Image 1 (cartoon, rainbow, N blue to C red):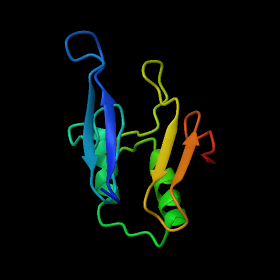
Image 2 (image 1 turned 180 degrees about the vertical axis):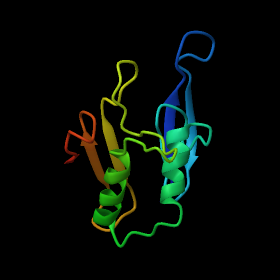
Image 3 (image 1 turned 45 degrees about the vertical axis):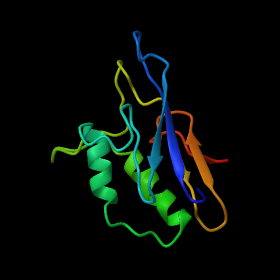
Image 4 (image 1 turned 90 degrees about the vertical axis):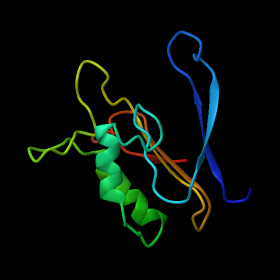
Length: 124
């Protein structure tokens, strides 16, 4: 249908579900994908990001990109906020993307080919 979006996921790992393509409908609004499933509330970074985005109504795509890029550069804090941009030997942040669909002026895809705190987003 017009206006709908989907996330496609190929099962990871080895075994019966490996490589099996699944489709998830994506409703209108904010969504987050880290290394788990779409909007997974059990993943701390996803949960923290969704809490920060809840109720946010940016004036346009540029405001949304500014908000998101700031959140995606977060390194956590002593108050319990998880680091979103990870700097560690195992499973570090190697890239970051922002996708805006259904916005005035057309869809936007921004990509940072490294940790977003030190690598600028390019608008494709």
